[in-house]
Image 1 (cartoon, rainbow, N blue to C red):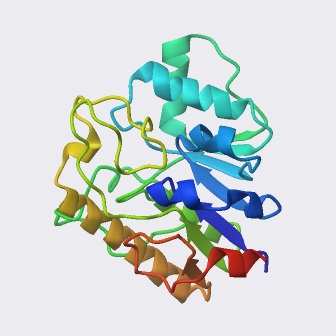
Image 2 (image 1 turned 180 degrees about the horizontal axis):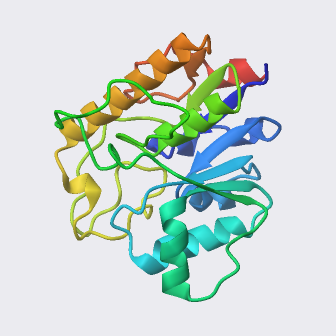
Length: 233
């Protein structure tokens, strides 16, 4: 089977040789375009399911940018209506976008919720904990095996008001402060992401899919570690 790489937006991405993935199937997310000036790599698929606390004009602008690129986008179907309401009539039914429905039961839960899921429930997509869960589920549904995660660091730290973003590859990734999601307890956020990746590992094992962590450094130890350069060279 063909392999795929799911690219996160952790700080390690600054040191990741993304150019090695130019001929690979890759899923990337959210504000990955901020690294485009540094590399000629572009993803095969772009996935967007997080509004976070981004100003409306920012996330809408991000979506419109990616829809004008040559790759395919998977965007949460709820956002389709929001874009239409914000921008008025717009030809958002483009051939390079799939508007995906997402489970609404777990979308805003974290590790502290007594009703948090302990397993995926495909074919319904579920973004418990992290938008990267959706990218991983799409890779599984498309039949890729093995799957490698890259740039998924964990080790979240609170963003200081007015300070640089310490959790992503670009210091400008989050430029807003009010109600920023990274102001919540960092330990709880790390635990939530860890649980989400544990579910991903379980789901892959049940389906006979191998999944590895090719991130440079970071604190994600759920998957077996591999060296990215050794995998692709």
